[in-house]
Image (cartoon, rainbow, N blue to C red; front, side, top):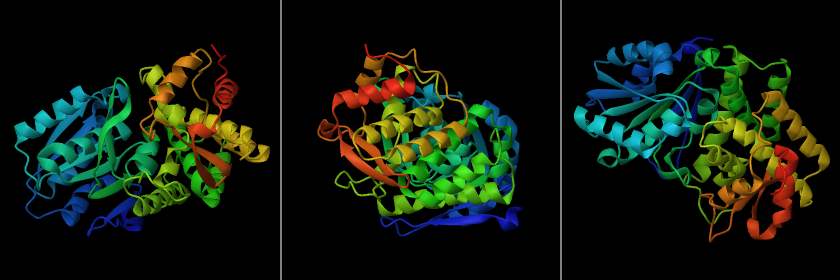
Amino acid sequence: MGPDQMLKIRVRLKSKATEYEIKVGPGLLSTVGKELQRCLSSKSRQAIVISNRRVFGLYGEATVKSLRETDLRVSRLLLGDGEQFKSLSSLSRVLNSFGEMALERNDVVVALGGGVIGDLAGFAAAVYLRGLPYFQVPTTLLAQIDSSVGGKTAINLPRGKNLVGAFHQPSGVVIDTATLESLPPRELTSGWCEMVKHGAVGSRPLFQKTLAYLGARRQPKPGTGKKLASLIAGHCAFKAAIVAGDEREALGRTDRTSRRILNFGHTVAHALESVTQYRRFRHGEAVGYGMLVAAEMSKSLGLLKSSELELLRCAVRLCGALPAAEDLDQQRIIKAISRDKKSVAGEIQWVLLEQIGRARIVSSRDIPPAVLRMALGLVLGNKQS
């Protein structure tokens, strides 16, 4: 499969007259410049590529070359690698760089990297000059199937994850599946977990397709073939459909097609990341634990059958080993959960499961505290304080 055989997903948003495309396939870094040229104003003069040193060392040259072939003046800004760099200080550095370059509203920001780079670059683009166009070139599995799709951009605060952000849709997304070959195993585990999440909350066929792909190999490793590209495209299409129907995650919606269902596993995941200062878990690893906790809660509340819970456990196991969590203090986790940004009127909105492929949003007022404590103990192996 080459650039001429790429898969395309069109994202249509009710709030915007324009649309954009997600393109998936191996060898697509060489097409980034042409895609920008196709999507953006002919008056664009400058592009800034935001990345980190490792990713830029692998893929920066090809990306910059592609951009310069369109006569854009290209600069780069390399940030630290890790969730702890998705911060106010990093944002300040990015915005100051925009100012030094004298970027104008028709110039473009290119996010080359994983979810941290995409979130930070996208948020900076959203707030500089009240909005610059930006392009997503995700290089991790998680970013390719989740964070690069949907327009959520944000940075973290010490109090919690993604507390400062904006909705800012990209002008396009180019997914080169060949970049996955350089990922360490834990980054792949992180992405596989997010794939499991998508299927678990909204599409049993997608869940089964993901499970079959993971189960076909003892230790899941990506390739660059049609099966992987098709799987990634399927997840992008699923998320794009959810976003198209509920772009800004409307507070009043609790139905099964609300964008909120994509938060399955994230309430606990964000707490785990927060209490470990974003240094122990990759985001998807934390989501893996979060999904299992939410599923245990679902079973305790009589929503989910034991057989469905076991199916989810099997899928998470196939994603890869998760970091140990039994040493974490349960009360600290519960306190971090109480600060979750998804709360409404002081109540956490939990995404639970009725079955694989069907989610339900449940207010914390309807969940006895003992149910959460028991689920945390069962999944994380930690004891109640």
